[in-house]
Image 1 (spheres, rainbow, N blue to C red):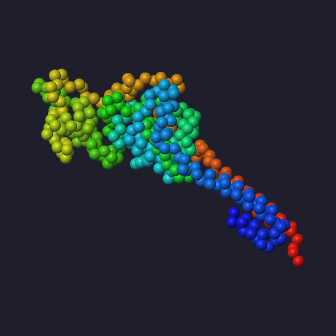
Image 2 (image 1 turned 180 degrees about the vertical axis):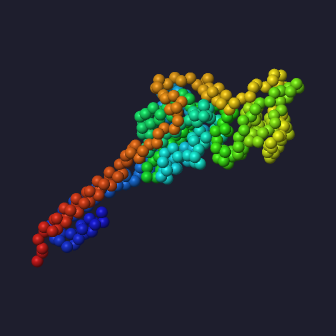
Length: 351
């Protein structure tokens, strides 16, 4: 651009004004047209959709297919924003911190994930480079796994995020929480030892399953704490709360459990406690709350298809127009410069 302007100035000051004035005006007019295109190429980032707009668009799609809308959950929003920032920073799609799976990550953030936790539960993630929520949804509707993330009946919550770098990156997370809103009994067993302990203070470094004790004649049930057991896992196993166990045993908030501690976990139990529960026993009961009935007409994948969709390659990203505009402007400048150079070389020298 600067070279062409300098050439025009050279022509105006070194050649007869009348002879080259029309040529200079024509070049200036072409440069003005090019400048009108260039600002539009740099304004794409200012029109990035908001996470709220993305969630509204997904819920509108679900409602149009006869499904209930999803609730925004802070844990899913946190995961989506971390993921979007990572992709915008150059990381591959579906990156996880500390080697966690998506299900482990959600559980470590306190999300009561439903489904078979050995298969990582009912959760999934979509990401794409797109300019609008509608463009992202249309891309995701192109295959079964991405469609299932938005339209699976086995979903109750959603989180969305947007990050902008070279392109606009959109991420959504959807998941199904348990019917009672509490963690499954075996939730803590799927967390890696170090990551689980560092991200949730209620989880010990090592995890031991809770073996239920039988009731005494007076109806009280006492549980002997084993190493690796927490108030959370004990309360979940005996269908009570951490606060209730603290109250029955006069435990303060700063008291930590030690191996061998005898806890009162139930009162007034008239029947012996049920047989020992294995970690996988409760997972099937909480996998699909009865309040959700699949009404969608679209055929969605089975449980194995609810895992994280395959990573989108760089070729899958919607193509932007900014590079085309810059290339067109550059070619026009080369053409104008070539014409001007040829015109000057062919002009007769002045005496």
